[in-house]
Image (cartoon, rainbow, N blue to C red; front, side, top):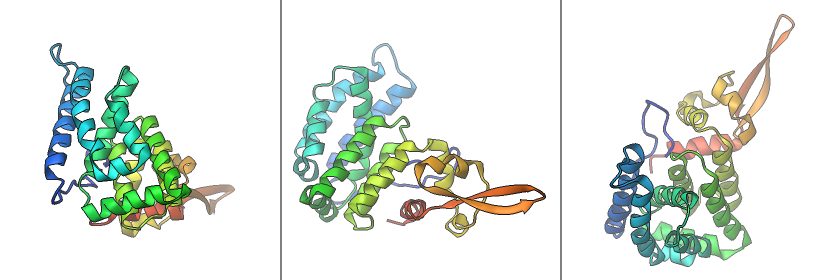
Length: 240
């Protein structure tokens, strides 16, 4: 998940019974990609690592009950096996990060997600939005946050509409500003402030503008969370 730079981690992966072997394979690929990304070598350039490993993960995920049941996901994973451009390989890396979170969910939650994403048009649109946002993301911390939002969707903590709105907000937000907002304490969240990261998040729909006190002839602007921003903050700070 997104984490504040040089600060605490807001999300921890949890192993669940029945998914450990799959998760280990996926995390192995993700870790190899990360290592190649930060220290590529002539023998194993970063894109070669993704290409050779993604086919293995694609085969695993295409047999997964959640991803196989949701057409928009199964199509994306089939595409992993036919990568032919740098953009495709980067998208695959984002998918791996997203999947590494999804694979920690219990079978019951995964089944509920598959049911919701295929039950009606709203669910299908939610799945499509997740994939479209993943494709657009420009920060490699964000895919795991989307995976966490999908988990909360499975628990019934967000609706299909909220999932789409939250995914879109994550896409629009500059990662460092979003990280600072998510790292605010729950106790201090409701306090209005002129913090620069809050102002920068205005276009996301997570923050709104308030008229603050007037100092002389100059009005002071304060910024506070919208209901959507409060929802995202609460979800990130939940223990499970």
